[in-house]
Image 1 (cartoon, one colour):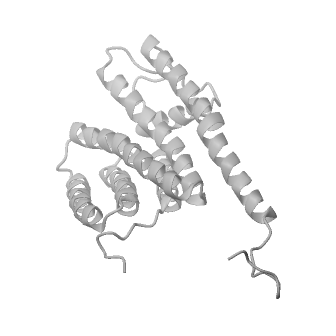
Image 2 (cartoon, one colour):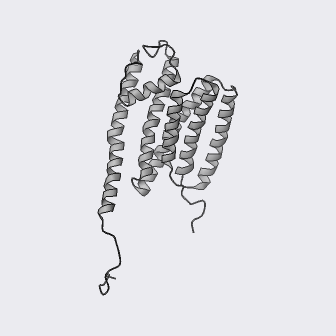
Length: 237
């Protein structure tokens, strides 16, 4: 009988993908208000909590980490909703979460693929990493825009979080609408790096995972069912 300490957690990367997609849409459409920043932060914490709670091998690891994350989530959300956290502190927390979520997800994905192969949850996790890459670059762009002496975008000197996230995914997907463009050498270099990483990730990681998943499903469909030998025929034992 498997003890609770040894019981593995089920991977729920489809849920993480949905949370990340909701976070992305919310960041773009939400106004610049305390409640909106608190909600976005709560979604980030919830995504990290879901990754950790469903990717660890031992419940002795998952439970204390989940409790700590839940406490940090409550502290951050309540503090921001009450206006007790400064913009700099909240920006730093958002940056830490933008890096922590994909790092935690990569570890769980590697374990999932190693133990179970390419599954729908693995594909969902890989797609989630793509969305997280765009959000991470959005945070880096916002950070560079704060520390640089010149304005980051040629079209506006005070880009909102919504505009930065929108620009980041336009670059990541190489859509290139042209309504926001980088005005500095650092900004253009970041845009090139994000474009290359986005395209390379799609054609390598996503392409390989989807190809393996399709091949595995096809082989499973083509393999004959295994049944007992006909009466009178030896099974070789």
